[in-house]
Length: 260
Image (cartoon, helix red, strand yellow):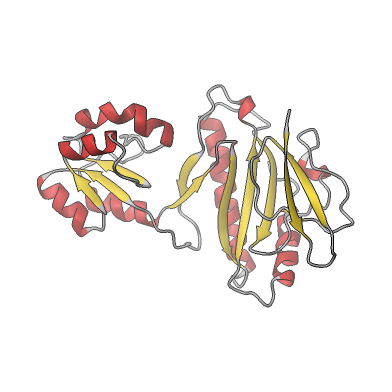
């Protein structure tokens, strides 16, 4: 198995340290002090990673290091193991966080008539009927969320090969095929998107340094619980979440223990 090298200069020394994360193309801010000379590999359990801490302790360290930068972000980076899945697909899900994080999303709605008017009035940026299906097929639009009315859905299904792999295909199960356009757009606007890269690594914000510790921890737990739900949906029994790291905008990356 090949490994990706991620290097970042350590502020307290003139040298930098390198973290090897097997199977990941990028994990933000994975920095260790010169005392951390070992490497994190897929063969090691999360609790044995150099410098591994509980979430509470790791967050306290980040808050102390970023005390002069209260608006810096707190992030988590979740490394999954796509090899244990029966059918590996990009990670894409949404959650309702305990303390919301503002996130700009482009919403596309397949609708006509009064439903199209409601969609535009509710803030959907891209709205249309059959002509919009062709435009999406031609790759003319970039969007983060997709909704369809039941009347448009039979025609929208021809886009399944395009929208499906991106996790954007409207479905009745997800509630994105509906006549309640206003309600769904409000819910989609409030939802926070969590996405993984092509190597199955999720990079997501969970708060800011100056937030209360409980708010940040609650957001973290919500995201981790949703990752466990995804594991069940993907028929993964164990070993899907390999390692989890917490970092701040400019602070060190700290591996967490007991994260699976």
